[in-house]
Amino acid sequence: MGRPRILVTNDDGINAPGIRALVDVVKQFGDPIVVAPDSPQSGQGHAITITKPLFLKKVDVFDNIEAYECSGTPADCVKLAKNVILKDSNIDLCVSGINHGSNASINIIYSGTMSAAMEASLEGIKSIGFSLLDFSFEADFTAAKHYASQIVESMLSYNAKKNILLNVNIPKLPLNEIKGIKVCAQGEGVWTEDFKESEDPRGQKYYWLTGSFKSELDDTNTDLWALSNGYVSVVPSKHDLTDYDSMEGIKTFERS
Amino acid sequence: MGRPRILVTNDDGINAPGIRALVDVVKQFGDPIVVAPDSPQSGQGHAITITKPLFLKKVDVFDNIEAYECSGTPADCVKLAKNVILKDSNIDLCVSGINHGSNASINIIYSGTMSAAMEASLEGIKSIGFSLLDFSFEADFTAAKHYASQIVESMLSYNAKKNILLNVNIPKLPLNEIKGIKVCAQGEGVWTEDFKESEDPRGQKYYWLTGSFKSELDDTNTDLWALSNGYVSVVPSKHDLTDYDSMEGIKTFERS
Image (cartoon, rainbow over the protein chains, first blue to last red):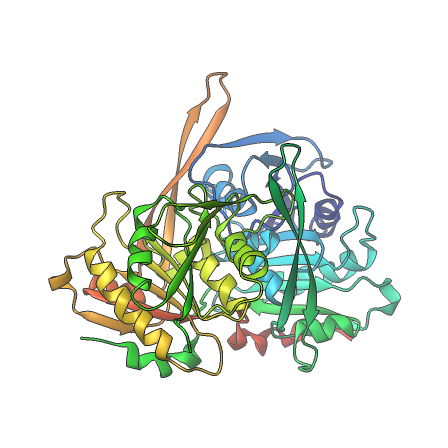
């Protein structure tokens, strides 16, 4: 058996420091191939591009590592990697990130980073999305790289019946202050939106979305609790959104 | 108690026939307000717009119904409706659609229609996404309207502890051939991608995403089975993506 083939992508774009950190991590364990957006895609959710063509360009931005930039979304990158670039080869693992900013709790819903990881999972590839709780372009990835290495190593040697998809978040703390890795459930949180209203030069009103996130911290089993208590959070995630608990209640909606 | 306030949105844009059909349905039961994208947004997933301003314009496209077109995504429309347009009023129900095309099975992941409904649910509003399995602009919405009416009526009178989110899909069949409404789980399906390769006028290669969907029909409890057997499918859905079944297995990834 050869070295594992590891697909690397992200949503901050191929020139973001976070993807460079992630390439550094995975090249210890296998042969990375990078397919990432040519520009930042934050807040893209699980968007795919169906109404226009996608451009793919081979680039030389990582030392001796095959890399492509793509005009599409993170999910497009994974589809192109699997179906165009690597169509005859196996992909052993997909990693996405390291995102600049949290994808814990309900942020997974809006996350381009996690949409790429989920797309890989839908394509039958085990995958991990990594996010660091630091939006800064100058973020320190030392601790994130340390823990990402441990999780990638665990994942490569893990045999599960189905393709595991992990949502990993790393607190903004120095390495020696992080307490460890915790497997958690997705926490409940709420965004309180605040639209800044203003006017364009022609007098037309516009709104710019900002907001603050309020964490629900009562449940110690969640990613939000783990992160606020100094742990790296690992949430196994899935694409089945069925709310099984509510099925019985709405049986009254049935007609025949 | 007054008439229910019903927010109507979609992802095909405010001029699509499907949203007109949905407005016709809900105005029987309450006071609709429409906030929808000014252009088609299919495949947008749960995208939100954070890197540019959003424009909102009052329009007169539905008889005597307050309506706005928005430059953003379906999720942006819901956020603006709740936080800017209706900030002091209650919203009793959000309906999204009627989408031109299926959002059954894993298509919920890529769906702008369902992202709007889920956004409403995250904002504490019970909500329903409706989709008709017919991509045509000239689709016949007669059966879809009939069943959407029944489901909206059921939903308005349903009292649940939490905000129910429904993914409703309607088969492409004449009204008298539809067998009824079935509450189901999200079915498993797979997209087989097919990228059409071509060259732009300057000789640069590009790829255009197409594909075909393969349904897993063994499980009679799923939306895919229901639709292929002539039923309207109703899947209660949620934003918690935790794969609880996999938590125990990956406990070995923990470190302290």
